[in-house]
Image: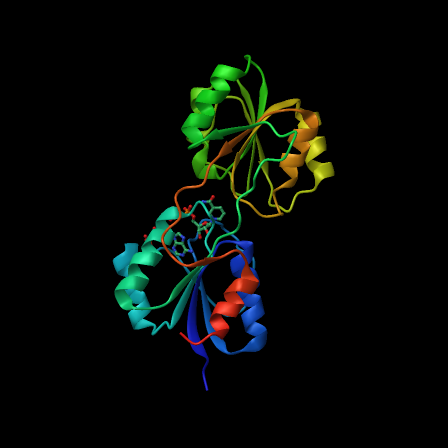
Length: 251
Ligand code: NAP
């Protein structure tokens, strides 16, 4: 008999880990949905569908057509539109929804974090705080880089999985196309090699990309930390174990 149908909204290590954990048990027939931003996503067990649903209404139609019994929103903490659509669509169709909400990073003694709302505010802070020619490490997605064009006197090192469109790049920008996890030794070396004076990061949470925070602390340089968008209103667990527990319970 076919398993019960589960939709995982993916694009994160948690989503992939959940799909792998469920593949072994076989109770759920899993489809992972990806936005299609990464050209060569890592292989996943179960079915994979790629591309947007067409807003909350499109997702609701998909849930009905595919007879999905539960949805796990394992998207990135900054994927706020997808999470809001998931909450609206699941409420409309009456499908139980759980969110995996990776805990945010919090500063520890020795950290110098500048809390900002978005990339525009990060760029404004850099312009006011750093001298011309100072080097800044941007650890952001390719779609968040354009605001730094307003800092033409700074030197940027951008680390992202996919390269941004050339017209979105600040004038002096070195591209590093790399995917985590990153080590403390590696981050220390990166900061030293480029003479980095500040790091810009999103508060993604998790271990894979946290080493830059320790390296910035050691180097006594600021981290301009973009805070998370307001989370959608869905019940949440912090990790894959919590999601497996939720799936094991009757609805
Ligand atoms: P977003 O702004 O919340 O989503 C924009 C639109 O992209 C959504 O309305 C939806 O289109 C489509 N979409 C997003 N996630 C999808 C998914 N898993 N499956 C199918 N369609 C999806 O999201 P985003 O910040 O661009 O992130 C896109 C994807 O990258 C997400 O899957 C997320 O987990 C992953 N990711 C994001 C970040 C980040 O920093 N934002 C970092 C790492 C990974 P429709 O309205 O047409 O359905």
